[in-house]
Length: 181
Image 1 (tube, rainbow, N blue to C red):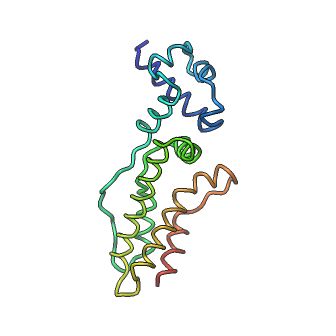
Image 2 (image 1 turned 180 degrees about the horizontal axis):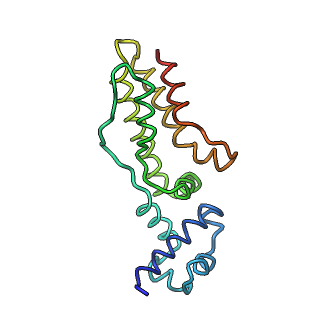
Image 3 (image 1 turned 45 degrees about the horizontal axis):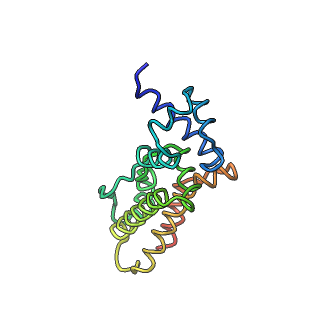
């Protein structure tokens, strides 16, 4: 067995358990058991339990910044649909739950979530500005529409986890588009 395999198993186990139970409610012994490693091996890779959470966030969530936006003038709905399908967060559903669950208690997690929100609002505002023909959309309306769109996309994973209801991003795109015309 390669040494890196143990670290990956530890991260996999921590991701599953932190998403389900939360960081504070997950003892390292339970992570070790699920990862099939000795408990002290966790601390060889991650000196403190918080270092494990920070590694998860750093390595398993990536906010893609400064990507071009695919906007078509006059096609607000289509532009937002493409944006929704190109959500700039590369993370598993479990990691998305961890981001929201731990943002209030851990600065590095909050920072990542803040960056994601800012990037998504920026892209939505820019895309709406390109797609909206004429002077129908002033800056304040575009900002509110972009922030609303971003919030719904970001929180949909948590809503689904809590209620079992999945929000259709295309329906959200249509609703926001109609509010601007």
